[in-house]
Length: 262
Image 1 (cartoon, rainbow, N blue to C red):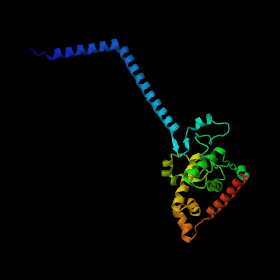
Image 2 (tube, helix red, strand yellow):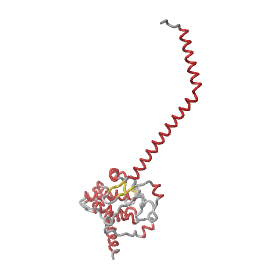
Image 3 (cartoon, rainbow, N blue to C red):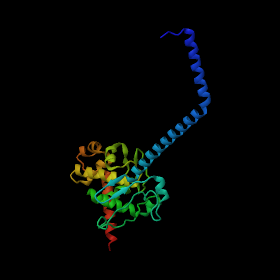
Image 4 (cartoon, rainbow, N blue to C red):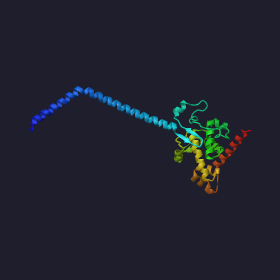
């Protein structure tokens, strides 16, 4: 085969470039249209994937449950709760689903928050009382003592914020209970149900640690175990002033609940 000259090769290359330009000029609108269609398809696919991810996340929040022996608490978004607010219980006391039987509430008696605390914004509605009663029974913690703790700690104000990072009914400090909260499925201590659940679980742990002594358990609830030893137990004492106050209030609450039976 005879080798073509350099000039012939250059001419052939020029002809190819012309053919390419003619092809692009003739079909450029078609090419642009196909590219636009592909881009739209890609954007739609991305939007569908994002929507599916959001739906899965919302469904996960909807189905997040606290599994107690008899209590199931389904958490929903704040906006959904506000839109579906019940007529008798307003936010945040309507943010859980209820699956209670009469057996769960056997022995339960409604408690009236003292007027002095109501005046200052304290409230502990029926739903909250029943929930706390069941949680206490499951944990083996005295219900009257927990009510007394709520009175002393927050004056029955679910949104109370202390001088430190202590918040809610039982003035729980999140940084000390991260593992506990994760185990209990709690992520918001200003949710009154989560706050009480975490606080009662902490009391259960302390009662087990101190052999069922409410004096010592309450002292450790106030100071922490290390602080309780440093400030109280090392001095040969078993009970802090805080613990004495709580137990005194608990006695009063028991008396009031017993009087309601008559």
